[in-house]
Image (cartoon, rainbow, N blue to C red):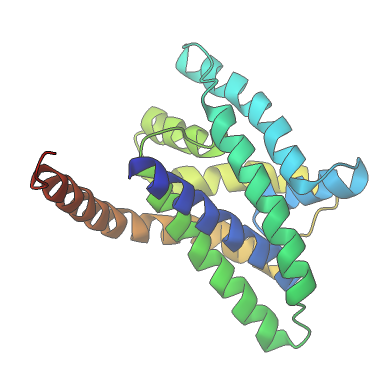
Length: 210
């Protein structure tokens, strides 16, 4: 069950990212960096997700003075895989043109990103390297997820600007609200998942042995 929840969380997160990209209002600094690299250098957005994950895993290891968490690559591979699939499907099915349809598309994406991230974080299986970096900075600075996430967003924003990624009003909203949305969903998803997993475990124990 835990691994199913993990996959569901990643799926929700990546479809949210795809919605923000498709809105054409600007996406998160990290995702804007991925798109910028894809446009400037080549390869798919999902491929750059994996390549940057390798770099971030090394950075995380240096910050924590521990061995690189190679398991984080598993999450990056799954994330990159889902990203390419969702972007392909959404691009062929959804093309918002009016301003309010773009706002709706972006808003749905921002909410799904926060929800999906909160869900998969609680499984404690393998973090996306950028999310691991968020938690590391949170611990090192003794702050909350909102502040740590916002700080990281600003760093990637500068790099995305240099690569001329999809920066717009949506990017500013993600920087200002992305950490807040994640912080909002964390306690609710934790409560829900604890109840659900406990219920599943109890049900399995009550099954008669064959």
